[in-house]
Length: 358
Image 1 (cartoon, rainbow, N blue to C red):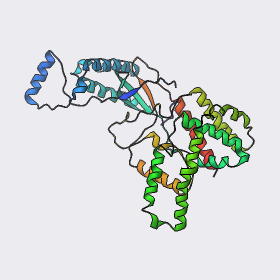
Image 2 (image 1 turned 180 degrees about the horizontal axis):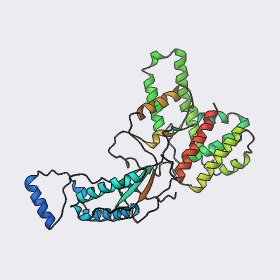
Image 3 (image 1 turned 45 degrees about the vertical axis):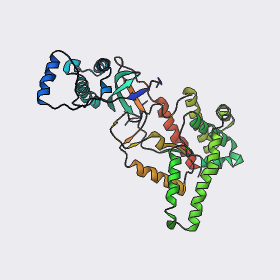
Image 4 (image 1 turned 90 degrees about the horizontal axis):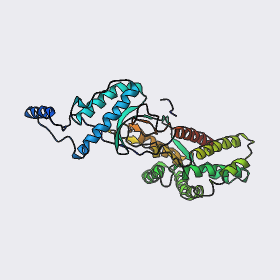
C-alpha cells in the first residue's frame, strides 16, 4: 500500500457497534402493519440491545445525512431512510454503500461515533511495512564512554529524550518489550540444560546489564535538560566523518519534526480495533515500536523470536489511520499523516545508525 501523507484535529473517534443484520425496528403507520404480519409467521429474538435503540431517531438522521455527503463525494444514489425501519434501513444503506465505495479506496468504509454524532468514515492504514521499529540504547551507552564522541553522544541523547518524553515511545522497562524480557528470563529457568555454565553466565550478565546500565540510561534520557539544549548541540557538532554526518542529519530531521509538531505522539492516529473489529488477534503499535536495550546477542535474538512467533498468529496490525469523516460534502482528511510518515522514516534511519555502532 502506498505510504499516505496533515493537520491534526484532536477529534476523539470511537468505534461504535455497526448496525447488525436482521434486527428488529420501530415504526408507526403502515410499517407497523408489516411488522404485525411478519410476527404471525416469524419468531423474533431480542437481537437489538436496548442501548442501541436509545436516541435512535438522531442516530438515523445523522447516518443518512452523512450518507448523503458520502454519495455526493463518490457520485452514487444512496438508499433512502424509507427503505426499511431502523436499524435495518441503516444496515441496508451501509451495505450498499460499502459495495460501491470500498473498491474505489485503499481502505474501508466504517460507521463511527464522532463527538456524539454518527458518521460514515473512510479509513486507510499507513503502511509500516511490518517492520520492527526498535531503537537500541546500548550503542549510545557505549558511544558515551568514548570521550572523543562526546558531541555525537549528547546529540543522540537529545533525540532519544524527544522520542521518550514527547513522542512517548514505549521502552524496555515499562512497555511491552519489558514484559518480553521478563518472560524470557522466566523461560530461561526451564532451559538450563541447553546451555553450558559459561553460556549461562553470559546470558545472566545480559539481564543484569539491562537492569543496571539499561535502566540508568532510561533515567538519563528522561532528564528535562536534553530538549532545551538540542539546537545548541546541533550547532556544536561540525560533521567531518561519515558517522557524524549521519547522526547530524537524523538529529536535524527529528528536530524539525519536533518544532513542527511539538506535542504529537506516535499513537495519536492509532485507533485500536477501529478496522476489522471482529478480529481478536491483533498486533498493537506498542509491540512493534519500542526503545530496546541490546542490539545483538542472546537476549536480542530471543526477544525478536518471541515477538515474531506471537505476530504470526495475529490477523491485524494496528497502524496510524488516514481518515475522511463525512460530516460535510467532499471533506478534507482529518490528518494526512505527515507526522507519522516522517516519524517512521526517521526511526528507520536512526535504527540503521545505531546498529552500525556494533
